[in-house]
Image (cartoon, rainbow, N blue to C red; front, side, top):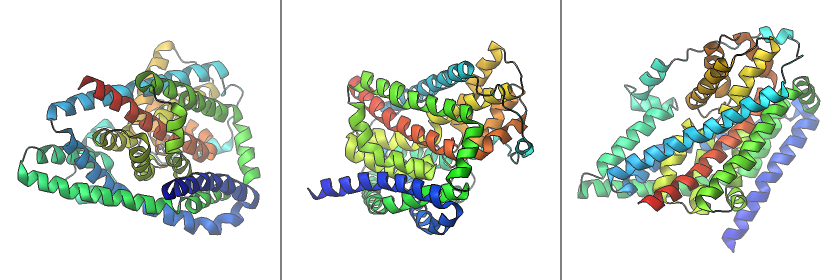
Length: 406
Ligand code: ASP
């Protein structure tokens, strides 16, 4: 009963936090900025847990697998799931943006000359980042991929060491359980944290009226992205879940809704990861090796919402400038939007940076990114929610596929 009560408190509390935060930020605008400390503390607590959790849960997850051959199968199915669902969401995005044509008739205002600082984004750099010379530096910089790789290898090797490895695994299991309990404690403050994060972000945007003005200016574009996210999140992904697992998507949604609302409030898949791990573990009942492998990897690589947004935004920019795209170019956008989503880190507005890749691939003007800036913080929250939802569903699908085959 106690658990039921605390779960119910949290579920409604976090929902109330999102709504009240929206109302307060909307009405009071910049005056609500003094609330920011509450959100900062909550976000910091989550961020502090992410890096140790990634390392430990990956090691524990891999050690659960037992047989290394199962890792190959798990890895293969996971990548297949990630690529297929991201591919589906990009196709949906391309279809919607071509149908709605949100960029036609949009005039290029002054703000479009404000271009983002160009950050070097190349595959060689991504490759270099996979094996950093100093693991602790990578940790302190929050670089997730090298940590995942290291932990994967480390956990795999522990399983081959016999008794000495087993005691280390046991040690890490203890840490993992302790960290997940800490997540539960942090989540008690989620209603306040989420309230503050939503209120202050809206306050930063100048309050409700300013936000509405920006939204209305590129309403068709924002609407296309949101419509795509809604279709992917409420139709495609639930259908995939049901087809593979026969689980009720609504129940799963309710079970992880705190993670989804945290994703909306923080705009970061990585910062949400502790909550996603905890909620999936206690509510989805998937095997620990699957969730502790799929979720950390998914938070970094699997971004359905971002993939959809990359494609829509790029084609929107082409429409604004009146640049017609050939079918071949749209195929290139399909590929690069998926890559840009994979390459985006699970942090706020990372997708905006990697979009340079999509635009460059088909020769679209980078200045076009300026058209998206004002409203991107909001769309970022929406797409991050779908990113996390895709990871959760992936865990269910992969768990049941793996279970059937082994
Ligand atoms: N903020 C997103 C995430 O963390 C990434 C992005 O699309 O910018 O999932």
